Length: 163
Image (cartoon, rainbow, N blue to C red):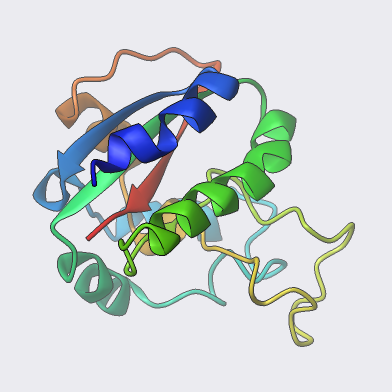
């Protein structure tokens, strides 16, 4: 089964552009977590952000266990990215039910399922939370360039690990 065909209606619905890329095109740098620590207001306040996410080495190891991924260019504002999170989880679920049992999506913004995150208390919706790309050390813009995307400031990206 072609994963692009499975998700094409959802990509069309949200006006997203998606490409399947080899995981070796995903650029990892430890400095991305530095940007989380010094510059992001969600650091230490969300289960989808450091220090609640795997450290850089563990994250790199997890990503290395995959061969292919979707890189998805998403339109809209930061608020739009949070509103798209249920749909991103739906994409992951569709792939899992179609035989891509390792499918796993990242969020392009901190998890927004709760009005206020419970961190550091236990997550109220652990099945729904996902880490951000940067929390895993992913250099989003360099990865997007390597994947052949053009983009501007009003675009966001996410990655859905496939297999």
